[in-house]
Length: 248
Length: 350
Image 1 (spheres, rainbow over the protein chains, first blue to last red):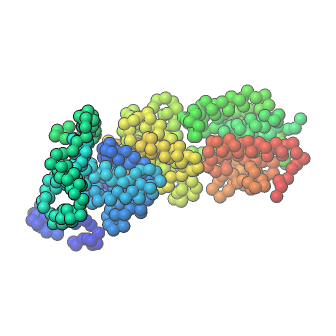
Image 2: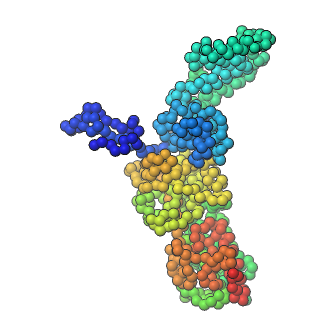
Image 3: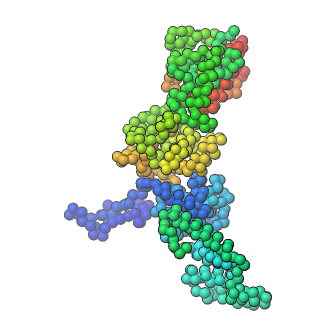
């Protein structure tokens, strides 16, 4: 029996066996087709609590599903699948499988914060998107996004020396993301900068490259920041039921 | 001295009317069919009232006490009015005990009847002991026993509150909003969360009508401070898997069927017209409006009036009403009844 309106069913919810015999009857192929139920059989309250425990997720429980965030969203305008309102609902009801279907687009929030200013309940959807992307990474559902890699490199340098040195940030970022250092656009940019750069600034950049600049007496601040970051990361991992995350 | 004013019903509206009349020296005969005054908040054992947050037994109890202590108010509890004859300024009411009361005017504060959930059998009340009403939860809270599943006394870990039970439902001839249930449900949800922090509370709604200043103090507060969850779905049925209750419906936001297990389901029951309204209308010679509530006069020219001159109405007798507004209407009806009692047969200004 063919399934009518098969196009309305998600392909992964259609199951059939190439070879199947039940009580002597051959039901191979489409004869054994069944459709997986769409029924939601339970809520998972844990999911909202986990995302609320991450920075930016704190106000997710305020959402009343008005859709102001999605309506105002820059990314939604070009990709209708980018729907913060919907994701917030999935998180609040604990529909993890449904959320994971969109795991590769959630991080594409461009942080324009139009939603932040449209939201009548101060949910701060932009921050919730960040927390959600973070949650997906911590749970291992997605690879750390390029922007997260950049942030990690940037902040690790600040924590280390109290300063950043641009070329070192770029090199670190490329190393983390497995990109070659010699990239055409970068070489071109280097050439043009070299042509116009005042001598004095060129020397300063060169010295910065060779001798890493540091904030004086940074040791105390560095220890305090590292301790705080360690605490925060441990608390987040604990809230998500993950191990302490040695190495961070 | 002028004849007394007859006040029928000893709930918030009736108590307010009686107290107001007595406060200006007007004698009152207050007839209440139950043995005790207080109306629904006392008879049904409400807990903390909206919006004061004060216990019903304290504040409505206080109104009862003031009326009982007032020499100008003659309380006839356990009585009903069997007959009511005469005209404005000279009515005669005959009570169940055979006594006759001369009255210059009358205020009907006869209230409402809670919707009986057995009339929506698909939602499991009467079939499963852990399906209860908002009134029962009020009693659990006001008794101090706490919120527990009636079946085995366990503390629920997940509670569903179904809104609009007995309201906004043409199938059962209730084409009105009962006005208070959204706010009462948000209030109850917060109380449950306060008493049982591990218990998750879900409210299934069609619209949320926490009107006016109840918006932030009940709806927002329940979400923001107490993390109560609101799901837009009108539930199809409540069944059981033998262990827990199963709430079935459609989650309209994700367009998917739901069958969610719960420990307790609470019906946010609506306010029906008083079941005695047909006989009340017949006894007092007044009209009911189409849903069976007492028909009221124009707010612009005949505040608290009924279809019979000299007979006034206040509170939930006219339709779903809050306690605070019932009390206010009691005072308004007192003013109208006083004018009718003392004036030379005043006719309402058109």
